[in-house]
Picture 1 (cartoon, helix red, strand yellow):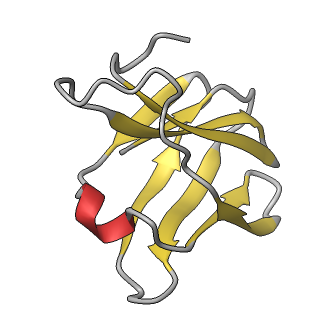
Picture 2 (tube, helix red, strand yellow):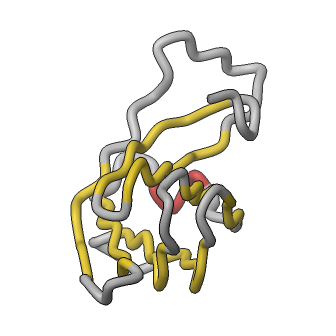
Length: 103
């Protein structure tokens, strides 16, 4: 699991939570144009309802559901990483990738 911050301000208190079990991963601080990586076994989130919450540098707390779709060109012989990429302080994209930073 990787949280990338492509925004121009700091993202804080990031939490990705599995709704049913309350299992979660988090990163306290991700500076602009950097990332935080953490372990989150696929068995914990596969097919589950996920919620992402974070705080902007202005103190705004945001919480939104997350949908991680299987890649269109899925290759079962490769390992994938789940990515949450903040495109600005209040928006994100969620996807899987083979390469840690192909975008």
